[in-house]
Image 1 (cartoon, rainbow, N blue to C red):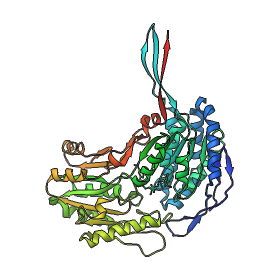
Image 2 (image 1 turned 90 degrees about the vertical axis):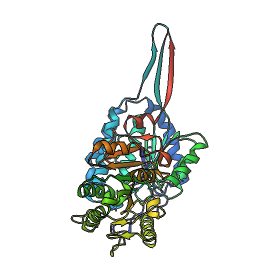
Image 3 (image 1 turned 90 degrees about the horizontal axis):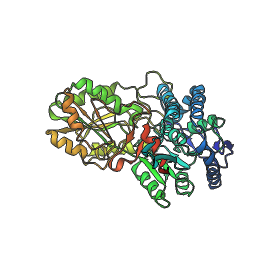
Image 4 (image 1 turned 180 degrees about the horizontal axis):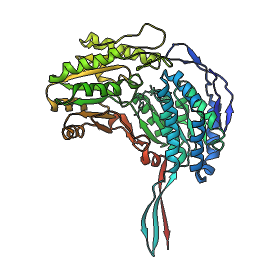
Length: 466
Ligand code: NAD
C-alpha cells in the first residue's frame, strides 16, 4: 500500500524512520508509515504558532466546506484505506469518510455563542468566544476518521490550528486525509503526524498546544490529564465505557435481541458506546440468551471484500489477546460461551462472536470493557437490584433501558448513571449535532454539537463603556 507522508506546515514531511502497521484481516504488515521525530514535533509546533494569528482572523467557513468537497471527491480511495487498516466492510469504511466530511460541513456553518449581558446608554457588555490556541487531536483506532472529525472540524472552525495524531494501529487514512487537505488549508493550520507509543506524550507535554482533545482508554486519558496539568492546557477526554442495557420483563425478546446484537457487535464490538453488560430478568433470561446465541451463530465472520460479512476481525493482536483472556476467565468462573467464543481458524485477528450466559460480577467480561465480540448476559430477579448493579461501575458513558412500556423504560433510563441514555435502542445518534459525553471515569467535557465547538474556545468578556 502506498503510504502518504506526514503533513507539517502545509507540506509533505519526509519520513526519517518508520513503524509497522498490520492488517487485521491477515495479521501481516500492511504498511510502514513514518515515525515522527522529536525535531519534526518541533516543526509542527512552529507551524501551528505561525499559523494561529491568521487562521483565527480568517473567514473559515468556506475553507471547511472546501475540505468536505475535497474529501468527498476522493472518498473511494480513502474508504479503501480505512477498510484495510480497520478490517472493516466497505459501507462501514465509507461511513468514516462521509462522517469526517459531514463534520466539516456541520461546523462550517455553526456560529460561536455570543451573549449580550448589557446594551444601554452606559455600556455594551458581551460574552464572546476566542479560539483557545493550537490543538492536539488524538483519536483511537476503532473509528479513525469519524473520531478525528469530531475533534479536528470544530477545533479548526473555532479558529485553532491542529495537529492530528492518529492511533499507531490506524494511521494510514489520516495521513491520506492530511495529504488531500494540504492544498485546502493555509500552511500549518492542519498538521497530521504518525508515530508509535511515545509520540502522544511528546505532543501533549509540549508547551505550545493550549488544548488536547483525546479519545481513548481511561488509563491513557489519565496520563493526558496529567501532562495537561503542567501548563493548564484545556482537555476534553472521551474515555472508555461499560454500558449497561437493562431489559424489563415485558420486552419482545426477538425484537430486543436483534437490536442488542446489532448494537453490540457493530464494528466487532469495538465501539465505546456498545451495550457491554446486558441485564435480563430471570423470567426472560433463557429466551433472550437463546435468541442472541442464534444471532451469534448466524453471524458471518470475515474480512474486507468478503461477501455477506456481518462481523469483521478484531483490529489488533493486543485487543484479540484481551478478548481471549476475558472469554477464558468467564469460562473458568462458570459462564457458558453460548456461541463462538474462540479464535477462528484462519490468518488474521478473527474471533467468533459469543454470548456469555451465566455472567456475573467478578468475571472480567462483566467488570472490564470488552471492546470486542463478547456480550455478557446477567440475570436479575429484582429491577431495583439491576439498576444498582448497572450503576456499580466506575464507567458512565452510555446506558439503555428496554420495555414495551416506554414510560417504564424512561423511568429506569433516568436512573442510570451515564452521559447518554437510550430507550429501546442503544448508541443511536443524530450525527454531528448530538453531543457525546461521559460521566464518572468515562470522560471530561463534551464533544460534537455546539458544545463541541465551544470547547475549543475560551470565554472572553468585552466591556465597552458608552
Ligand atoms: P488508547 O488509550 O490505548 O489510545 C488512544 C490514543 O492515545 C492513541 O492514539 C494512542 O497512540 C494515544 N496515546 C497512547 N499513549 C499516550 C500518551 N501517553 N499521551 C497521549 N496519547 C497517547 O485507546 P485505544 O485502545 O486506541 O482505544 C480504545 C479505547 O477508546 C476504549 O477504551 C474505548 O472505549 C475508548 N473510546 C472512547 C470513545 C468515547 O467517545 N468515549 C470513543 C471511542 C473509543
